[in-house]
Structure formats: C-alpha cells, structure tokens
Image (spheres, rainbow, N blue to C red):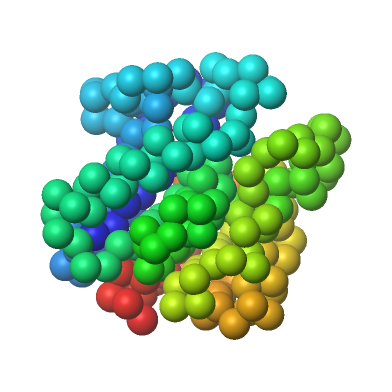
Length: 213
C-alpha cells in the first residue's frame, strides 16, 4: 500500500496535484491513497480539521497533527491488510512522513521524501525565521529509524525553499546509521511539483519504492 501526502498548498487550492503520484503507484501494482491532511481538500472531498496554512506559526510542526495522520495510515493498513507500506510526501507532507518513519514505527517500510525540510531548524534559519525549537523534524529521529527501512529523498536543484542541503544532510545521517538511504538531485527543478513532475527521477523513485527496490 502506498500513501501520498501533500504540502501546505499556500495558494489555497485543493491538493489534487499529488494524485498523479498515486496513479503511478497503482500502475506498478500498489493500492494507493492520495491522503488529504486535516483541513485540506482532494477531489472535492475535504478532511476535517484546520489546514496548516491557516494555523498560527506556533501551532505548526507539532505532534498532534502528525499523530492523527499516523492513526489514519494505521487504519488504512489494517483495512487493506497491507504487508508493505510505502509513504510518499511532498514538502511539509514529506516532513510529516519522515517523522512518522520512526515516531510511528513499524508503520512503514519505505519513504520517498520530496522537497523535504528534513532538518527544520536549518530550514527555518535559511529562510530568516525563528528556529522553532519545539517543532518535530525528521532529522531528530535519525538515530531511531528502523534499520530495515528504505529512504529516498528527492529535491530540485533550484529549490530555494527547502534547499537541497536539508535532505542531503538527512540522508547522510541516515546512511551513517546504517539505513539504505539515497539522495536524488532533480536537475533544473524547483520546489513545486510543476517542475519536479517533468523529471524522470521523481517517478523512477516512486516506482522503485513501490516495487521494493
């Protein structure tokens, strides 16, 4: 089973843009779910709760929303009797899934983290913001990622939001821990999916993760 999680979609539009990733997973034989985070809409269906983009800065990146998503994925896993779970996230969706890889272990076997602010404090500093010391961050869980996990982290070469170094440092730490982790730099792509979806690297990673390669 593959679960795809979107970013904050600051434009206010539905988060439909992740559906093509779910379809790519289906094409290689997976049961796939494009999951709407609390308060967001996908395919005209809205999730309950308050969207992150509408929350105050101090209420973001905290455990309750992350744990609610973990519960939803656990329920899907049980419903579909899934033997293997692949998590694919973009931007803050990648951050959430990167945290869940350990916080909710052994929930998932593989994670594909796209444009991930994997080291939140460094990411905030790069954007001139406060360090958000209470924020959940994938980087803080590196030492406790299950060693059987497989991780792909893909960032656009021209991403000026979540700089490539955020994911690259995360992958380096995971590899040091003994995790099978791969950093992929998408040439010419920025932070948004419009440029990333034109890159073969993205769907190659999705297919490899879904096939268990």
